[in-house]
Length: 338
Image (cartoon, rainbow, N blue to C red; front, top):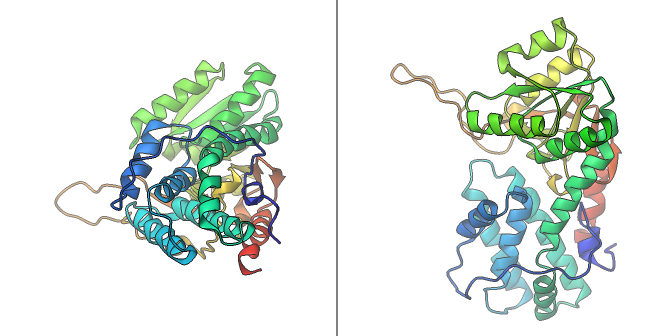
């Protein structure tokens, strides 16, 4: 059953009054959804990919002429497909575009199919999703920082803002009396340097290790007490699609009986159910056999970590077992068929 306000029923909802809206582009029938999405990401580092996709679709509806409901939905689906086709990994965008479509359909139901009323509602609340993303990240930090006890050591990799926020929140309460092992990605030197610098500026002692040292540090030295990672998307079965290397870290953590936590906002929940590494939903050439030039790993390569390797999901709605994802998605998207 749809709630009184569809915006408040979406994953990571934020109860808020009307918010300042982004300035809409000049009306045009040649709306460039891809450029809009990229410009949003470039201009606002706090935006996640799903939320940037949602804001792009809101901008789209602010430029297209007012049409019938069916034409509007077709326009949203067309531009959603165009946007997803423009990136190597469409999974995070799919989570955002699916959520927005559900929001739009629910809004139309609430307004008895009046697109003009829905348009005005979207314009008044165009920043709601962006504000929700920031609030959700803070909620993740509040829900999970207590796992980081005094004297403990956390291993992490990548550049998850949810993980960084959680560790920053822990540093405030524990006065930096814990340590972080950061798995350095030599293909992303600037990113690794930035994350380490940010953590150290919070007063957190950080040790950097190469990817090849993870098993040694986890298993032989027994210096790691827990692992925290973020996610590009959280799949319907409670697994995650994340930076490549996450799967092997999760396997090593399981072998060493070290808790493996995923810090992720619920707007990253996706109606995708992968079976294994071959079923992540898009093609990426990780294996580049060549006798001429050096092999190159895809810049944004990801892998799939199944739910049985995940101890808990830390969300803005609290700490949950992986099965929570299916329950949430069933509750949210079930209204589409109601």
